[in-house]
Length: 319
Ligand code: TXA
Ligand code: MG
Image 1 (cartoon, rainbow, N blue to C red):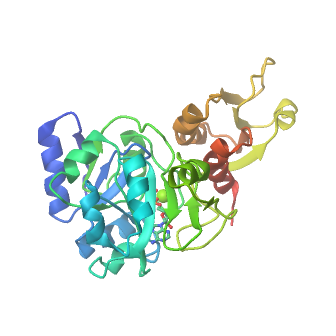
Image 2 (cartoon, rainbow, N blue to C red):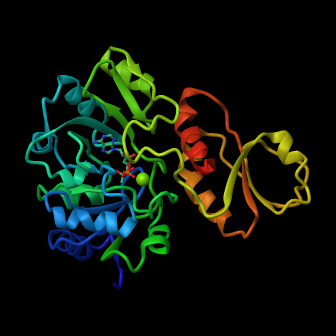
Image 3 (tube, helix red, strand yellow):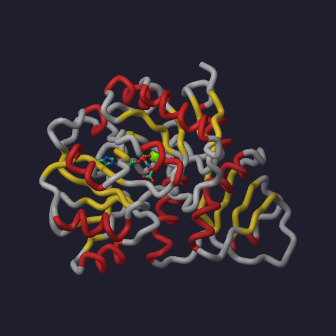
């Protein structure tokens, strides 16, 4: 199939993206986290196409994206008050709520689970697409286990020919996927780290919020090996980089290095938000340098860097 390249700055193109979704086809759409591969969440046949295009196992649940808080009850049931507290503090924004699934929500979206992930994305384009009341199921718009795309070009390179359209909407602000918090049992727990930390959520709720278990495989889809470029990724320390001359490696370093390195390298931002924003793009770029390995210097260890460490650990893992 030929993938149409639509522009989010053109209202006709946005209308066309809406029509494509309504007709049961897939459109890659920008969000504030990463590009999502969207299908009408109420159309099981359309949702099945997501799994086919990504090569994703059918039991890996998808996140449903809504345009208004009122839509929560279309998809979830037994919704605790805390869900609304988080929604009013962070929505539209990069927090996904894990709730009990409403009976009418199709099991194709949840991979057969009784729970469902829901979020309201903060992106003008997404907001106008959802204004008609449609909800869309959207995983990150990458082939299974590969890097999540933060630009339309990246989506085109990996899914071009497999989906009806890509809606070009510039670079994603955060660059890392949303934080997922499980609200189905107490104490609440963050299942996937993201732009909003467990400490921030705990402060918002005034109660304990547990951090994710390291590499927990609590549900299908939360696999240890993920977010991978084609080149092998290795996490290293500054001393490894300093003694690596002569190796055919690509290096993403965090520390400023004065000496000239005998291999391709890129200095990553010091600021965590900027680092997150750049990470997938940098890995994608380094992947194209044709090196034997990509070495990534471990960034600082503190809670605000947890999401970055989580994605780097999974990029390195080869299970
Ligand atoms: O920022 C994001 O969340 C992006 C944008 C497009 O919204 N979406 C995203 O979707 O990252 P995806 O499918 O790549 O990752 C969704 C994660 C998976 O790890 C999946 O296991 C988890 O959410 N998930 C979804 N529904 C779940 C459920 N019912 N129970 C447990 N985990 C769930
Ligand atoms: Mg993903």
